[in-house]
Amino acid sequence: MKVWIFRSVVLELEKLAKRFRVKYHVVARAAIRYFLENAPDKFVSKEPKMRDEKIIVTVVVTPELLERVNKYANLHNTTKSQVVKQALYNFLKIDKQKQHDAIVTQVAEEAKQKKKEKKPIQLEKLPPNARVPITFKCDSQLYQMLSNEAINERQTLAYVVTTAVTEFLQKYDVEKIKELVKKEDKFIGGVLTTVKMPVEYALKLTKLANEVQAYRSALIRVAIVEYLKSRGQKV
Image 1 (cartoon, helix red, strand yellow):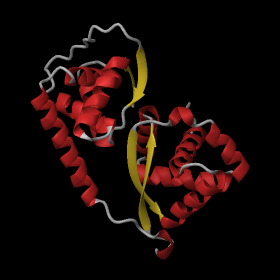
Image 2 (cartoon, helix red, strand yellow):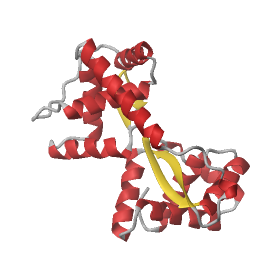
Image 3 (cartoon, one colour):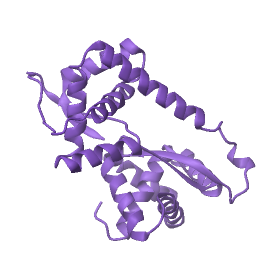
Image 4 (spheres, helix red, strand yellow):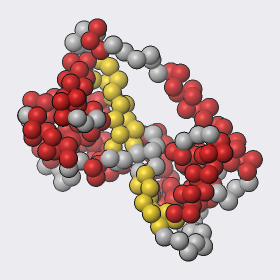
């Protein structure tokens, strides 16, 4: 998710990350979670009095957190980016103990989630019809369009992504894929999504990523974009 915020605010958040020895995105997620859990009845957008320039930053969030932000934004007739921006601004104003507690809670939650994840799977040893988790990142707009398409087709997100990848691998050659990958920068974002797909396609994606010298996540984003276009959506 991309938001415009003051450069000095970004620097303050990065200082917090250094103090707690965590990544910047962990602090950002802690700030958003804290804001939502202590959300005021009435949303007020209030920017700090800063004189420096604004810059665009990407905040990596999970689909679960994005959904909560979306619900809050809809309830208060505002945008997701406004909610996230206000959460980051407000987090710098709370006392250090509350900042500490929020970040520690966030770190604990993410550690718990990592424990649930399985050890790395050797894909080559699995039967072709086995399904394996594949993770990719995209921007919130593309994720929303993908979710809407799944709803329209009355299918799961995993089904739509797998279908998109299948059609993509069948339709394009390596040179065309290289060309498409070069244009997919605008779809990079902070929504982290995991879906299960047949190991056969996971292996094909990995092999193709090596051939075109791109990340597997980039190939999945391109496949989704091409799929949505073929279904008449303007991407």
